[in-house]
Each structure stands twice: as structure tokens, then as C-alpha cells.
Image 1 (spheres, rainbow, N blue to C red):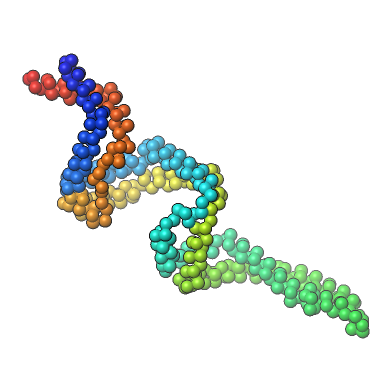
Image 2 (cartoon, rainbow, N blue to C red; image 1 turned 30 degrees about the vertical axis):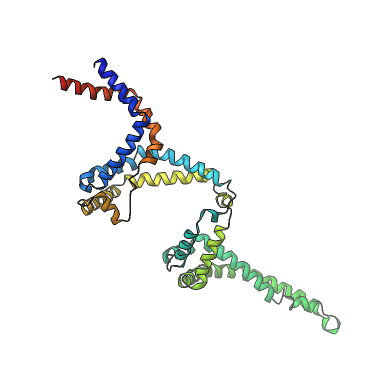
Amino acid sequence: MSDRDQRHVAWIKQRLASEWGKAALATNAEASLRRVLRTPVKELFDAGSVASLIEHVSGDPMLSDSIRPLFRASMLLSMARLREDPDKLGVYVSDEAKSLIEKLLDRPGLLPEKFVKKLLAHGAFEQIARDVLDDALREFSEKVDPFKAEWGLPSLLKLKGPFSIGISVVAKSFESVRQEFDKRMEPERKRFLAGFARKSLEMVADFVIKRNDQPEFVALRRELFAWLLDQPVSELVGTASETSTDLAEQAGHAIARHVASMEGTKRRRRAQIEMIWHAHGSQTLEQALGVYGAKIDPDPKPLIEAAWPLVKVALATPEADAFFMDLIGGFSDADQS
């Protein structure tokens, strides 16, 4: 390459990295984007290439080595900040969003029947029901048991006068009978609760399912939502320790990696892309996006402003020198021939 070509390359690079280059890039990018939006989809994209790109981005090593580290760092940093946030959750929910969520909470069928039954049929809830019912039966028994209740034997023992004669002797007999009664009653109560606890939870599940859409349950959902908005953010996320957050991120990554690697996922994704391509291939990109209510702002200035430092660094690389030298030198060689 001649000295003239080298000077030419240096001038081009300096020109492109200047404010003139930045403005020219913005102008050309906007014109190019407008042209792209007016171009038919089938001329812009190939279904197979798009599917391969998505598979590359969503699979390893891109998912594990690039996307995951950035997502993990962002999530851990955000959680750390939220644990120190004294504001109430409602500060971050606009009036419009509150109205929409309240309308959602008013909708029928929010709780799937299978989910309610599966949740309440779990052994953990059955154990809780047994313990609660056992305590309730014990308390009820103490209030109606003539051996213990204030209206029973204890009140008789407090009697004075002729009615108290022989009470102490009878009391001793009653005490032995009571102990034997309690001894036999305990296993019977346990056997009763073993079956009744499960039955009671089934009754609760049916009750929730049948009344889930009634006004009092709708009001409950609204009240819980209002209570949630009134809680400090730091308290809501305070129980999510760094270890819990890290485990949640690991689990999410494992699921994403597994789902992305499944052949069924790849087949469905390719079929969906091909369906969209065939449905909108003859439409311009702008028309196709409009079908779904989407619109692209053709003004690239904010993006270029943010990316301009990257562009200047890229122009200063040896690879950029080689590219421009090859381009200009090739033109010179072709022109001379």
C-alpha cells in the first residue's frame, strides 16, 4: 500500500471518529432503519438463520458464560439494594398499575381448583390440622368434662354444709375414673383426628373453591394487595438472604439451560418462527409489527450516543486499520489495473 493510501486510511479513521462521523452515523442509521421498516420481512430475515441465532444466544456457552454472569451480578446487586430500601412497595406501583391489578384480582377463577386441592392435601397441612384440632378438642373437653370444668366436680368440692359430707370420698373415686377415662380417650382421639384432619382439609379446599369468586373473597384479595403495598420493601425482601438469592439464580439458570437444550423446545421455536415468517413474509417489517401493536422509533440518536465510545475504541484497533487498508488498497489496485 502506498503512502497516499496510508494517509487516506488515517484521514478516514480520524473523520469517522470525529463529531462529524457521529452525526453522519446518526443520520445514515435513521435513514437505514426507515428503509428496513419499509422492506418486506422475507427480504430481511431467513427463518432458519433466525432460529439458529436464538438457539446460539439461549444455549451454552453463551447462556452460561455471557448472559448468566451479567444477570447474576445484576440480581445480587439489586437484592442488596432492596434490602436497604425503606420505601413502601406502593411507591413503585403507579395508580394505573394498582387499578389494573385490582381489576385482575376481581376476575373469577384466579385460584386453579387443582392447585388448591394439591396444596391443602399435603402432609404438612394435614399435620397442622391434626395439631390444631387436637388442641381444640382438648380445650373443649376441659370445659365440658365434669371432672375438670368449673361447673362440675371442682364446684361441688367447694360446697359447704351438709351437701359437702362425703364429697371428698366421691372425689377420690371420680379421680381414678377420670384417669382411666383419659387413658382410654387419648388413643381414640388420635385415631379420630388421623382421618378427620384430612377430611376437614378437603372441606376447606371445597369451601375455598366454591366461594373463591364471592364478594368476601374478592375483598380479601384486595385487602391483601393493599397490605402488601403498605409494607416496606426492605421487610419484604429481608428474608431473601444472599444464599437464597444465589440458589434461586442457580435454579433459574439450570431450568433455562435445560429447557433451551430440549429438542422439543427447538422444534417448537423453529415452527413458531417459520409460522411468523410465512404469515408476514410479504408485509413490510413496519406492517408486521403493527399487527401486534408494536412500533419502532426510527430515531437512533440515543443508542448512538450510548454506543459512541465503543465505536471510537473499535476504530482505533489494528483490525480496523487492516480493514480500511485492504478496502482502499484493493480499490487502488483495481483502479490501476
